[in-house]
Figure 1 (tube, chains in turn purple, orange, cyan, blue):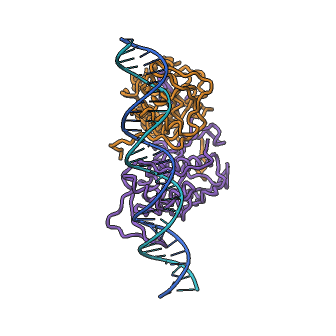
Figure 2 (cartoon, chains in turn yellow, green, blue, red):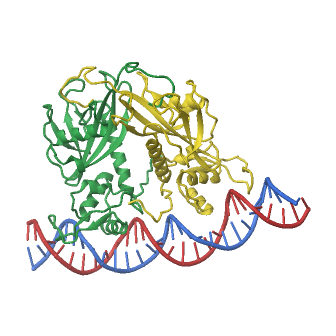
Figure 3 (cartoon, chains in turn orange, brown, cyan, blue):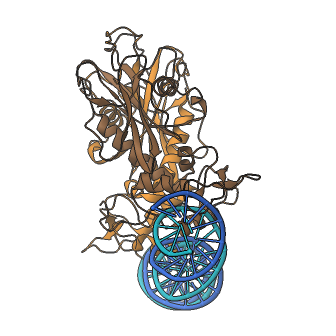
Length: 243
Length: 243
DNA sequence: GACTTAAGAGTCAGAGCGACTATTAACATG
DNA sequence: CATGTTAATAGTCGCTCTGACTCTTAAGTC
């Protein structure tokens, strides 16, 4: 669309295939993990790849992404999950077989249910983000873009709560930041900043304090209504700054 | 791509057309403007629309966007301009004629050359962003998304310099922020923050001070090497915060 | 020559932040 | 069961940055 005068005919151009690919991230035992599937076919047979698949004729890319996510993870309540459109990868030769344009999404999961092997008999698994294995096609780049985007959005949105179950402690929330940013944060300061940001989290009224393993039991919070954080929760400045 | 076991065949699905649409923004006499074209054909004949066009078989979406930008603006040095991929719009019925997936870009221009009427005889013009006219298809949404994205990126990247000519004054830079954010900023504080952010701008060594109309002549700066701003230049907090 | 406009220097009080200490309440281990 | 470990939470202190503001300088305008 957007062409303003010339009419066009349906097959004037070689058709494009459109796929939705997913970088599904979760925090598991303190470390960032990615959902990957093993390819059974050439090209890249035996390589790990991001889950994804074709956009059907009557679907939007987001709908297709959500459908693929449900198929790959076996979750049934995919409706509430946060899906973030990353960008679209359209280099002519990114798939050696044909012209494929891929709309990439990042999905954030709270818990990490074991993936089903998928309707197609491929292997699927949660793999740690560090070290990430070699991926098929340009999926390493997509995954890196997903990580960058999520890391940046943690600063100025309440996105981190998408990695947490509906009710969580501030310690769990802090672990999300630490896992994604690869840093460690000071506990008291983190708490002070989170609670000083209106709408970020709110206490769950009648909830008993939770004890997760050791340590003093923690108060229980849930995600607040704020879409953007004021003030933002900036990550610690590094010395070797990216120019 | 990303389907892991089933082979696919080139025409297994109804083909998609892929277009690149552009939200071309500039700051002109202190106000934000958008480059729009008037549609000559149905649907939406007579409506304004974002410039754009088909992605050719051997092009990436970004290459197509750059080509369209050159065609619509008549600029020849489109290579240096900042093109920011926004997102992809893929709702099945966004174009009533056929299935069109649109990859949207935002482009930021320093000066505002009058647009050429395009190879197709449509009318093209810079229109003020406030008030924006009704647009064809879902282009109003694309334009709003572009504005949101650019506004946010001004905070933590050096993107504002993309709206300025190669050499500029701090007053011009401030006008960019004011036009995009729709606020007014305190001059001395803005200067202090910009100069305190390493790599944002650097003084042009032998340049004479510039006088743009009235007022005391200003020192001349150019864009610095920093990709991200530390600390960021946050926009003033509004009272009625978007929840 | 008086007025207007914008650049740029400088001031000051308060908010926010990083670093740090201390206390409390759970589990772990012998 | 006594002791050590871990994590949550309270609180302190000094430094930095910010927003609001004033003042001066150097241009154009009337």
